[in-house]
Length: 245
Image (cartoon, rainbow, N blue to C red; front, side):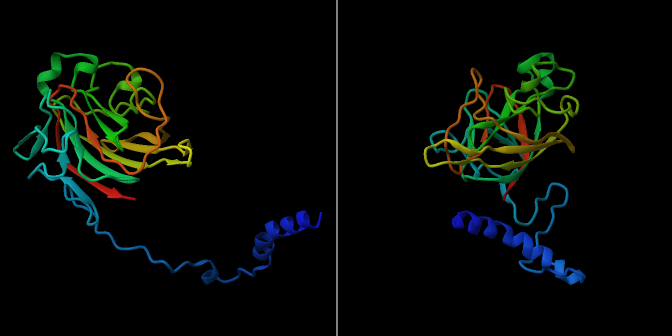
């Protein structure tokens, strides 16, 4: 009984201390340390001062193919374009939680295609959780497979697509999952996606891997690279940078 009372008293102690504190001066609730570090914001396509630049239009040095070799995607006029059949590409660096900026464009030549065939690609967060890329401008498909969806899981809140051939922007804030020692998930991954300045995923829980067939799977992992998908469509990318959080 004494141990229970002691434990209860320890539980109440912070609340009692707070209640007895005489907070009558403004400085008593001011926090001065630690002081936030300074980051110079970006300007237009220029990234913030602490960003890791993955692609700036000058080289493919930030990427590799599945075998660790230079990717076979096309680099032309400052753009990175999918070369159909050459396979997905991965960043050389691995990441946990992050802020990602990426711009993409679907080709006007795919206008005659429909559904999932019109400008299909994807961004795989930590190599396993896909944010869908698709031309969803006046192009209906299943809601959890259109642009801005967490593929086969969560549709976007709205369709914020620019017309075919225009540039699209994703700003993605991602919180990596944590796992217990036995491999089970302790906290799930979360993602916020801003598409062309419009929130389309608002701190959305990712249920597991984004499978084409079947339910999401839980697979324990640590930091991992970003992956861009080769779905056979010549999607172009520019201005890719990331800020580890």
